Image (cartoon, rainbow, N blue to C red):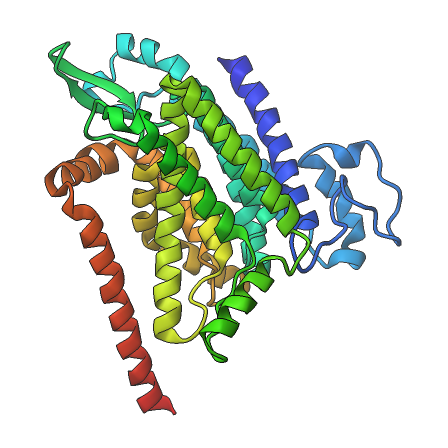
Length: 415
C-alpha cells in the first residue's frame, strides 16, 4: 500500500504538470510560454533537466519572473503539489474506505469485494479530475472553457462507458431474486431496475443517435437572428453552420460517432448499456445548463453563462451519469460560497465564472455520494417518478419569469 501511494503521488504530480500545460498553452485568448514543457519564451534561458521535474522545477523557473510576472510560478507549483496529494487520497477514499457504499456494506468482506470496482472508478475519476483542474483555472483566467478540454474528455468518457459498466458510481437497490439489497453501477435506468427491454431495441438506438446528433449540433456555430425576418434568419442560420472551417472535423466526428453508436448497439449487453448511460448523462448534464442559459439569457437580455459551462457539464455527466450530474448541479451553489470568498481574498475580484462551481459540485457529489444519492436523490426519484421532468421544466420556466421581473425592476430603479 505504501508503494501504491508513493507511485500515485508521482502520477498525481505528473498529471498536475499536464494540467498546467493545458492551462497555459491551450487557453483561447492568452496562451503563454510558461512552464518547462511549452514553447520557450524568446528571452528565456535554456531549460534544464531539473526544470522538468514536477513541483521542484517551478522553484528554478522562478528566475523568469521578469518575463512572466512576479510569483507566476507559485500557482502552477501548488497545482502540482495539490495533485500529488489529491490523487493518492482519491484512490484511498474510493477503493479502500468503502465510503461510496451504504454503511451496512462497510465490512471487511464487502470492502474486499468492492476494491477492484472502486479502483476502476478511481481511474475514471482521475482523468475527470485532471480535466476539471485545467478547465477550472482556464475559466478563472479567461472566463471561458475551451473545447480542447471538454470535447476530448466527453469522447473519452463515452469510450470508457462502452468498455465497462464499472466506471459508474455504485447504488444499493433491492434484488428480488436474491431477496436482499445489493449494489449496482448507477446506470441510466436506476432507481428502477432492471432496464426495460425497449432501451435495447430500436428505440434505444434512436435515443442514442438523437443525443449524439444534438450534442454535435450544439458544438456547431449557430445563431438565429430574427431582425430581418424568418427567411433571412434561416439563411443566416445555415450559413453560420459552415462559417468557420471547424465544421468539417465536426461533421466527420458526427458521422463517425453515428457509426460507433450503431456498432455498440449491435454488440448490445453491457457495452450498449454503458454507452447509453453515458449518453443520457451527457444529455441531462449539458441539457440542464443549456436550458438555464437560454431561459436566463432571454429573460435578462444578456448572456447568462458561457457555452463552455454547457460542454463542461456534459463532460461531467458523461463520466458520472445523469443522477450524479443532477446532484452536482444542485451542490454547485453551495461550493460557490467558499470559492467566491477565497477567490475574492486572493484577487479582490468579485466575479467568478460558473465552471469552477460545477467542478466543485462534481467533487462534492463523489465525496458525499452515499449521503446525497442513497438518502436524498433516489428516494425523491422513486417518489416523484414521471412528474420529475415536468417539475424540472416548471422550475426553469419560473426562474425565467423571476429573472424577467427582476430585469424590469432594475430598469425602473436604475435607468
